[in-house]
Image (cartoon, rainbow, N blue to C red):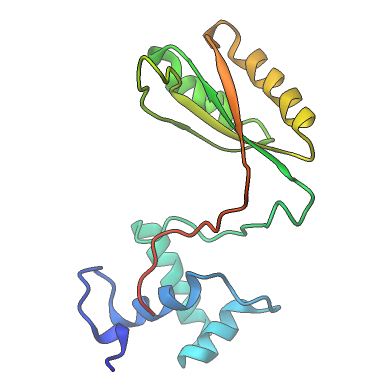
Length: 169
Protein backbone atom coordinates (compact mmCIF):
# COMPACT_ATOMS: atom_id res chain seq x y z
CA UNK A 1 0.00 0.00 0.00
CA UNK A 2 1.27 3.49 -0.79
CA UNK A 3 2.16 5.90 1.98
CA UNK A 4 -0.65 8.53 1.97
CA UNK A 5 2.02 11.25 2.12
CA UNK A 6 3.27 10.12 -1.30
CA UNK A 7 -0.15 10.42 -2.95
CA UNK A 8 -0.86 13.64 -4.86
CA UNK A 9 -4.14 14.76 -3.32
CA UNK A 10 -4.08 18.35 -4.62
CA UNK A 11 -3.96 19.61 -1.04
CA UNK A 12 -0.94 21.80 -1.71
CA UNK A 13 0.85 20.27 1.26
CA UNK A 14 4.34 18.92 0.83
CA UNK A 15 4.80 15.34 2.09
CA UNK A 16 6.26 16.38 5.45
CA UNK A 17 3.49 18.92 6.14
CA UNK A 18 0.92 16.32 5.14
CA UNK A 19 2.38 13.82 7.63
CA UNK A 20 2.32 16.47 10.38
CA UNK A 21 -1.30 17.37 9.63
CA UNK A 22 -2.31 13.71 9.55
CA UNK A 23 -0.53 13.14 12.89
CA UNK A 24 -2.21 16.09 14.62
CA UNK A 25 -5.70 16.30 13.12
CA UNK A 26 -7.15 13.88 15.64
CA UNK A 27 -5.67 15.78 18.57
CA UNK A 28 -2.32 16.26 20.20
CA UNK A 29 -0.91 13.55 22.44
CA UNK A 30 -1.76 14.10 26.10
CA UNK A 31 1.85 14.39 27.24
CA UNK A 32 3.96 17.21 28.67
CA UNK A 33 5.65 17.89 25.33
CA UNK A 34 3.20 16.89 22.56
CA UNK A 35 5.21 18.39 19.69
CA UNK A 36 8.27 16.43 20.80
CA UNK A 37 6.22 13.21 20.79
CA UNK A 38 4.89 13.94 17.29
CA UNK A 39 8.38 14.77 16.07
CA UNK A 40 9.74 11.52 17.47
CA UNK A 41 6.94 9.51 15.81
CA UNK A 42 7.61 11.21 12.47
CA UNK A 43 11.41 11.17 12.67
CA UNK A 44 11.60 14.98 12.77
CA UNK A 45 12.98 17.61 15.11
CA UNK A 46 10.45 19.26 17.48
CA UNK A 47 11.45 22.72 16.23
CA UNK A 48 10.68 21.61 12.66
CA UNK A 49 7.21 20.34 13.65
CA UNK A 50 6.40 23.57 15.52
CA UNK A 51 7.81 25.77 12.75
CA UNK A 52 5.90 23.97 10.03
CA UNK A 53 2.64 24.15 12.03
CA UNK A 54 3.20 27.89 12.51
CA UNK A 55 3.73 28.32 8.76
CA UNK A 56 0.58 26.30 8.03
CA UNK A 57 -1.37 28.55 10.42
CA UNK A 58 0.01 31.74 8.88
CA UNK A 59 -0.74 30.54 5.34
CA UNK A 60 -4.29 29.57 6.25
CA UNK A 61 -3.74 25.90 5.36
CA UNK A 62 -4.90 25.12 8.91
CA UNK A 63 -7.19 27.44 10.86
CA UNK A 64 -6.21 26.85 14.46
CA UNK A 65 -4.55 24.70 17.03
CA UNK A 66 -6.54 24.64 20.21
CA UNK A 67 -7.99 22.63 23.01
CA UNK A 68 -11.43 21.13 22.45
CA UNK A 69 -12.73 20.21 25.88
CA UNK A 70 -15.50 17.67 26.34
CA UNK A 71 -18.01 20.07 27.90
CA UNK A 72 -20.32 17.19 28.85
CA UNK A 73 -17.57 15.62 30.98
CA UNK A 74 -17.03 19.04 32.59
CA UNK A 75 -20.66 19.22 33.70
CA UNK A 76 -21.99 21.48 30.93
CA UNK A 77 -24.92 19.27 29.95
CA UNK A 78 -27.43 21.87 28.73
CA UNK A 79 -26.25 23.00 25.31
CA UNK A 80 -28.46 25.35 23.41
CA UNK A 81 -28.08 26.77 19.94
CA UNK A 82 -29.82 30.10 20.28
CA UNK A 83 -31.25 31.54 17.08
CA UNK A 84 -32.05 35.22 16.65
CA UNK A 85 -34.01 37.32 14.18
CA UNK A 86 -31.83 40.42 13.82
CA UNK A 87 -32.22 43.12 11.15
CA UNK A 88 -29.93 42.16 8.28
CA UNK A 89 -28.22 45.54 8.29
CA UNK A 90 -27.13 44.95 11.91
CA UNK A 91 -26.37 41.22 11.90
CA UNK A 92 -22.58 41.59 11.56
CA UNK A 93 -22.33 44.05 14.44
CA UNK A 94 -24.79 41.99 16.50
CA UNK A 95 -22.70 38.89 15.86
CA UNK A 96 -19.56 40.63 17.10
CA UNK A 97 -21.32 41.76 20.28
CA UNK A 98 -22.89 38.38 21.01
CA UNK A 99 -19.73 36.46 20.06
CA UNK A 100 -17.75 38.56 22.56
CA UNK A 101 -19.86 37.32 25.49
CA UNK A 102 -17.81 34.94 27.64
CA UNK A 103 -20.50 32.26 27.65
CA UNK A 104 -20.97 32.10 23.86
CA UNK A 105 -18.71 29.44 22.37
CA UNK A 106 -19.42 30.34 18.75
CA UNK A 107 -21.62 32.77 16.88
CA UNK A 108 -22.32 33.12 13.20
CA UNK A 109 -24.66 34.46 10.54
CA UNK A 110 -26.86 32.03 8.61
CA UNK A 111 -29.43 32.60 5.87
CA UNK A 112 -33.09 32.90 6.73
CA UNK A 113 -35.54 30.41 5.21
CA UNK A 114 -38.75 32.39 5.14
CA UNK A 115 -41.53 32.04 5.99
CA UNK A 116 -40.71 29.13 8.32
CA UNK A 117 -37.28 30.16 9.62
CA UNK A 118 -36.78 33.89 10.27
CA UNK A 119 -33.49 33.53 12.18
CA UNK A 120 -30.20 34.82 10.80
CA UNK A 121 -27.90 34.88 13.86
CA UNK A 122 -26.86 31.73 15.71
CA UNK A 123 -25.04 31.60 19.07
CA UNK A 124 -24.08 28.42 20.95
CA UNK A 125 -24.57 28.67 24.71
CA UNK A 126 -23.55 26.02 27.25
CA UNK A 127 -24.87 25.67 30.77
CA UNK A 128 -25.16 23.18 33.59
CA UNK A 129 -28.96 23.35 33.26
CA UNK A 130 -31.55 24.61 30.81
CA UNK A 131 -32.45 27.33 33.31
CA UNK A 132 -28.86 28.54 33.24
CA UNK A 133 -28.92 28.65 29.43
CA UNK A 134 -32.22 30.56 29.57
CA UNK A 135 -30.63 33.12 31.94
CA UNK A 136 -27.82 33.59 29.44
CA UNK A 137 -30.34 34.12 26.63
CA UNK A 138 -31.84 36.98 28.66
CA UNK A 139 -28.37 38.52 28.72
CA UNK A 140 -28.01 38.13 24.95
CA UNK A 141 -31.42 39.72 24.44
CA UNK A 142 -30.32 42.66 26.60
CA UNK A 143 -27.18 43.11 24.47
CA UNK A 144 -29.24 43.04 21.28
CA UNK A 145 -31.93 45.37 22.60
CA UNK A 146 -34.36 46.41 19.86
CA UNK A 147 -32.43 44.33 17.34
CA UNK A 148 -33.91 41.20 18.95
CA UNK A 149 -37.05 40.73 16.86
CA UNK A 150 -37.52 37.20 18.15
CA UNK A 151 -35.44 34.23 19.20
CA UNK A 152 -35.56 30.61 20.19
CA UNK A 153 -33.20 27.97 21.51
CA UNK A 154 -32.63 24.46 20.25
CA UNK A 155 -31.24 22.15 22.94
CA UNK A 156 -28.99 19.21 22.11
CA UNK A 157 -30.71 15.86 22.55
CA UNK A 158 -27.62 13.67 22.14
CA UNK A 159 -23.85 13.93 21.84
CA UNK A 160 -22.51 13.85 18.29
CA UNK A 161 -18.87 13.33 17.41
CA UNK A 162 -17.60 16.55 15.87
CA UNK A 163 -14.67 16.50 13.50
CA UNK A 164 -13.40 18.80 10.83
CA UNK A 165 -12.10 17.88 7.41
CA UNK A 166 -9.62 15.00 7.64
CA UNK A 167 -6.86 14.00 5.27
CA UNK A 168 -5.79 10.38 4.94
CA UNK A 169 -2.96 9.56 7.28
